[in-house]
Image 1 (cartoon, rainbow, N blue to C red):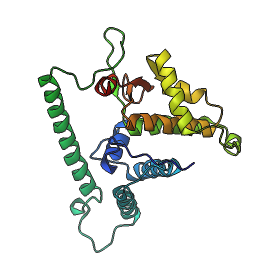
Image 2 (cartoon, helix red, strand yellow; image 1 turned 30 degrees about the horizontal axis):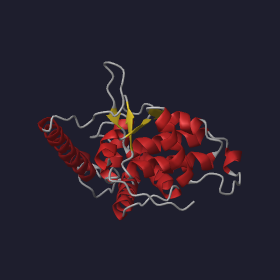
Image 3 (tube, rainbow, N blue to C red; image 1 turned 180 degrees about the vertical axis):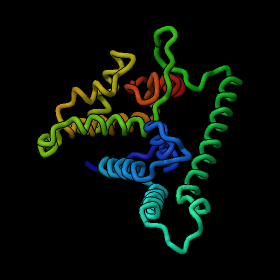
Image 4 (spheres, rainbow, N blue to C red; image 1 turned 45 degrees about the horizontal axis):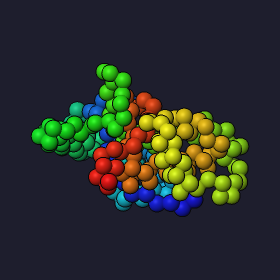
Length: 241
């Protein structure tokens, strides 16, 4: 299946690292570089499998993580300075992450202020939620995490099934839009759960990415790393009508 998708929310490798740090509840000043590197490379492998456009900066960061990991595994040189004076190989990465995180937070504040000025909320949900419920827009990495979780639960013998043109992204896009006419929100987990095999799971995932790219839908969740719901982007529909 060859299908390339490029999304605006696909910001960069620092976004992915911050996502993994938050997901694993890691102290940003004490990053377990071996574990984070392994998870980062797993995400890149999954992106390649989905044929997503991976910018060169993602590969540069992968090389950086592997370099830091190797430096931390090497025994200290006897001629080196005292332990308390040794430089932590992670120091530069932590500095970059903190700086990037600060800029993201400031950008978020400015975006909220802009929304208030227009008397609009930047995280409005285009369907009626229950009173008191708050939804947040999910990131591409949240979607990839959901996909990874599902693929791990699929029996390996199913991976070897050969199904010729049974599922296409175009058909899944049509199916999802049809389903959203009947229901205000779709559970991504349920869509994956009801898939017949790995090919249908991936076709569904790519269809969701395509609908996000076309601004036809947005993906939201009640809290970080919870189930993801797909809803129509009513603002986009109003603009084109």
